[in-house]
Amino acid sequence: MHGIAAAAKQFFLLAVIKLSHYDRSSFSQRLNVLIHGKVVGGRGKAAVQIAQNSEAIAKAIGAQPFAGSLNLVLDKPVRFVESEATFFDNGFRMLWPATLNGIPVWLYRWKHTSLHVVEIISPINLRDTLRVGENQKVTIALPENIVDKISFSQNIIWAAVWAGRRNWCYTRDSYYYKFLNFCRASGATQQLPEKGMLDVLANVIKYKLKRFSLVKPDR
Image 1 (cartoon, one colour):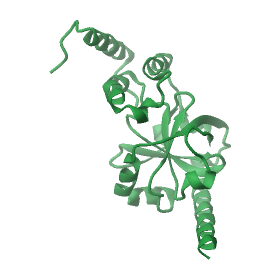
Image 2 (image 1 turned 120 degrees about the horizontal axis):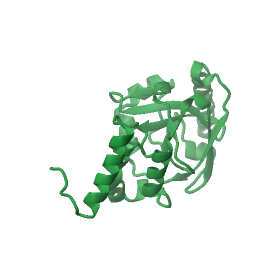
Image 3 (image 1 turned 90 degrees about the vertical axis):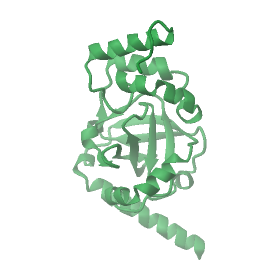
Image 4 (image 1 turned 30 degrees about the vertical axis):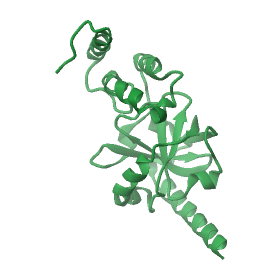
């Protein structure tokens, strides 16, 4: 009986999230963009953040979120259009509707998320439902109006920091935080830099000079 009840609950939650997805006008378009990535282990931070913001998330997705997220490292950098997002936590965190291996889900990011990282929120346990484990490939499908442009210079900066090290976002905190402000100022995170390209280039040059101890760091 317990197994039947669990299966019925899972079926009901899938129905709820499908209805809440397809009721959104921004999601009524064809899912014509595919993004590939792999599942990676997290650090348990999302479970705390989801618990702290569960009311706001439940309002956005139409059901109570599962305690925790599914962490993905994407095959390439991707920025999502913030004007299409649902915001919570005072505008610092964002959700976008999508599907993961055919199941409706919500893409979750915060302002300084690296461009190759996205976490997945759902009312259901996605690891169990999709039967995915570490390093298994998955596919996100979403409308093209949710995908934003990344400039050539931003791609170059992202590659300089993360090419060959994409998993380090979850495994090496010291590396992640070492380059965080540089990536934010240079446009290599979800949030676009407030300054123009000349200021970005100045930040890159200044950062390089600091690394070689040619100038003193700002106090």
